[in-house]
Image (cartoon, rainbow, N blue to C red; front, side, top):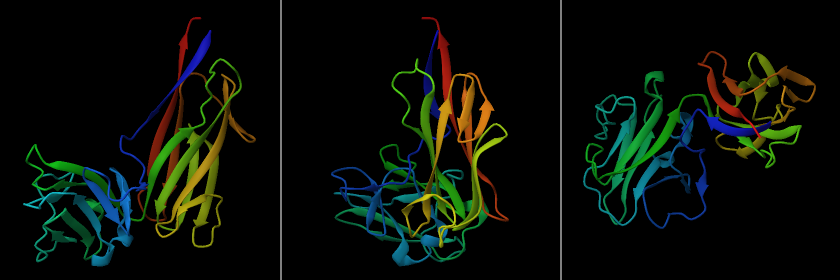
Length: 263
């Protein structure tokens, strides 16, 4: 009997990542702080609260006609870019040669309005021919990604060793843990990124984007990390948890599936 592992994750959009070629050769993209970002990138509200800190949505080689930023959870109420009402966001635009809508906060972001936004260019999101890209604008802290790395190529050899990578973005004061069931494989409290009190790897300093890596060993019956172990057969479901005091807890799951088949 052999074991094969399949990784599934509870998110479809990608980690925030600067694009080496900026702008891309074609297609819609996001630009922030001089860099281009991929579809599904995360932006801390505290870092987009001025016109010179705007998230730019760009479609090269086109002229802006209407275009929109829209909160995904409320598609019938797009961001009002007339800059005259109580909408927390403000917009500026460039008509040509590259259609551009710049989005930033003029006031604090209410909790009810954080989350996924989509930008549509060069026409409104209601038009099926528009171009769409997504961005997550959040308060305090978020889990940018939770992934599995270095899965072994030969799944019949035990023990099997791999890594869990959980990346936190946003607020510099927090606690973080990586768990399987009720067992914490790694747990750090009172983290303070301004003075690097926890053992994460800094990826982006201005947004306090920090990656935490947990080494995993599985012998087919037990998951272990260092001196901590948990009896686990079959699917292994891990959870990364980030907590900022007084704010909603952020969680992200990843599952390593153990599919049993007969040799």
